[in-house]
Image (cartoon, rainbow over all chains, first blue to last red; front, side):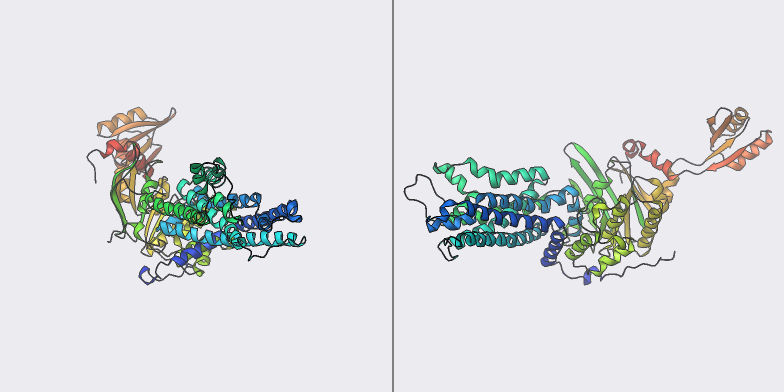
Length: 277
Length: 309
């Protein structure tokens, strides 16, 4: 038999191949992320919406135009309407990076290429976190700048060095990667698109509204949830000592920010190693 | 010859359903090995266990002596096409392959080369979602070739391909085997194997039916028979039966034929001549692979009693 001509050149044998490097997985996941047109569109539209919501909130805050307490002014930059949308989109986008692989079966192609499944989840998590940190930072900075521009017109601007303002900025920027990672972790655990979306929205958005801050136990549960933690971190003022409500601590809220993504991604890595693909 | 894929007492149960049941076989390099069985026989489950996607309930599957899931990166060891639909429709073919290549430290130029090889170079930057099934199969084959692996596994690779594509795939598999690679090819289409495979692994209901060279397998099926057409069917049947053959009537009334087993065509012709019987047709029918396959998998469980390999 004569071998037909081929365009293929041979690769170095397995022994001569470069070692498996985690940064190759990062690069691969980055290629996957940027090669989907929906990624850029989703992020761009979300940023526009979040920044727009800050502008609207500031414009319609009549107190800001008068001489409201300076401490409340930066709060207008981070209105719940905009940031709940950010939670929703980042959570779902994070989930989709894995759920889309499960629903199409691409996960099997991926796993044959990279049998180290835990590494794939970690690479996806790292790329997702990076992309949404940038998106969150742009949205939060944009929110603050737009809000301050509106307030500045009324001589009510507050510098970023004002107590609590930088914290609010950082918490709002990090809200996106925190939610994206929670979504990603849930996506690996649940695999089904609809189930993952509902669970993400429920845990990130709906659950905190179930619990009030008037009881100790109820407040404790609420404070352990992501969107409540964000809400506490963007409050630039100190809690009113006369208030009957329980207030979350700043440290506790940052801990919630760290633990949710860590726990969901760690669980995802653990489960993905044991389960059939 | 070295054994490359080794499956040993492999069993997979889903709840009470046993998909693969104590399966053992080996696949050797430099040959195309067909993996054959009716739908639901457990072919895909077996392939997934060999690739480490599914964990066996019991038993082992190794590639070059190692369970595949132990490799941190897989593409240089095994190339596989399991299902052409296992891609993201929103990505271009080039982006899909680039990501896979990058994850395994395979140089970028290889993406262009495999796309050229499978005939998708012109649509490299088009979204996979718009591809036909045949094009997706080609993309899946490109994926399998990406790492220049010594072992290749394909699950139903010709589904949805046009005749030209089928011909190309056959030549490609032959060439890959000729290069010394191990080519393991599943199909429920016997005809595909007839033209491609050197060896066969046949399973039915999750159990091994046969594992042997294709030639031996075909010979195990229905033996040779001779078809005879004659206007004097009853007369000839009597003569042949007397000579020790078994005769089955075939065809329709007015165009009667006899299927004769146990006598070669030349003996039948001589007997007819001696008895003054006119023959309109005398054809030797060799057992087709299809017939052998049907016969052996018809009741694979019964067939297997006491036949465990």
